[in-house]
Length: 173
Image 1: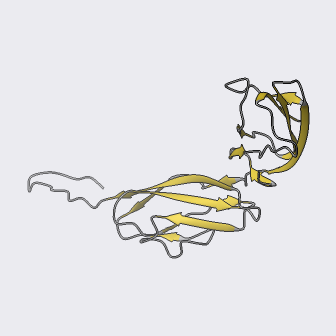
Image 2: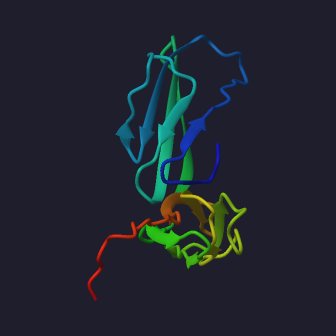
């Protein structure tokens, strides 16, 4: 099992159960996270799949029992890292041919913007966007622990238009 994960990651614990004297058929497994029993699909569930929703240190305990009533316990510690904060900023409106700076506010240290073709940079926190049509930009912010969060900002491009005035119209100042 892993020693570290992020909030929202699915972590799979797969134990290896062996015996020095020949293993009797297994009859029961009990999984606990921080001392609290975890519901498993069957009485003998060799694997545990769990999604951690809180950051911090956790203890995963597995108690295995044979049909003869012999039990053993193993403990694994796992640290769950928080997701970075991320706000991609408010949606923007520009006229065709203009550009606008879009800014991701985050405590992360790695940024990835997509689509990147109309951005001044795709790995900075504040690229300049010059889209030719309305575009939703996604930004992924990744912390130093490898945890990521995604947000988006919509840049609406206002297209030019023509206005016709007939000869006999009057326009007041």
